[in-house]
Image 1 (cartoon, rainbow, N blue to C red):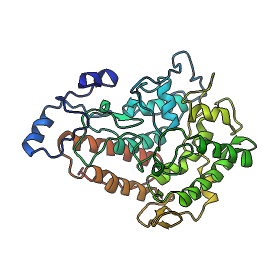
Image 2 (image 1 turned 180 degrees about the horizontal axis):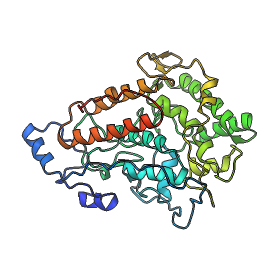
Image 3 (image 1 turned 180 degrees about the vertical axis):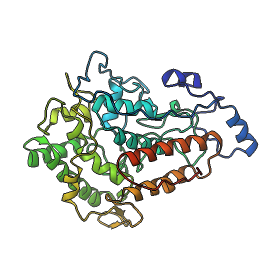
Image 4 (image 1 turned 90 degrees about the vertical axis):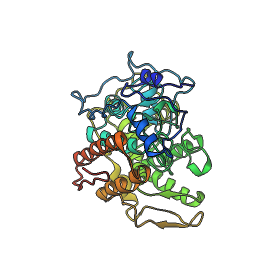
Length: 376
């Protein structure tokens, strides 16, 4: 096991030094004097701003000689997101699965041509709840000491495997957390995707299949998961992920909008680009999601209140048509619950990353009023 931040610096961008602490040990519980002493030992560099759009957004070979597939090594992190898993397996992200927000924004643009504001919004909203604001590192899988010393509890810095932040119930190819493993490829789920693709897409996955499969996944979890919940922010990622494979897993030279199921398995299970894979031509965000939401116009965020088949709406959650409620609740509830009283460099790091999140929200076209949980 790695025990010093000198090792972390070799694995990512060196942005700080700090005296060694046991893995996962929090600064919570220290006296004010002890906390100030710990913070004063940190050489901290503010997180850099996210990158802008790609200069060249055309279709491009991404499974190239500079980015070969390499199998996982012991300790490498992979998680619930097949896109990030694939990017790490090909070296667009650090192959160990520990990355900075800037690295992730660059990778999803370069590897898949995600639209810039969409990429920034996804990355910074995910990073704020699953990453380490001080070290500027996040695991795309499980919790690991490679993201550095944990901030004070109740922060978790538990990586993308963390349930019900961005990962959550009704995943396309991962089981609900209630059943034990929310991040590994699940063949039963994938066979459901195959079945719906054959029934509604003539053996291909497309927007029509995405809508029908999303509806099935929600109904299936209501009927079988006694702890099922689908509220913001997971509500938004659940619907967005339904169209993600159509938008980004089809070769950029193919304009049919029909995803081959062998190619789907390559991403979902094997975490690799198919041979000679080209990214899509032109950047895009969540185009096609309206096809999914139109099939369920009366769906409201909620949860199973008393075991299976007891779904009730949650009036406190943002709906899919309330992006500003989503933003305000995310900042004032999700972030504040993890970081109720940050101080020093932690507070500054949170303020900077929240600013990046807000800028992405505005750039995406949502005219939300900015909130400042830790002051301006």
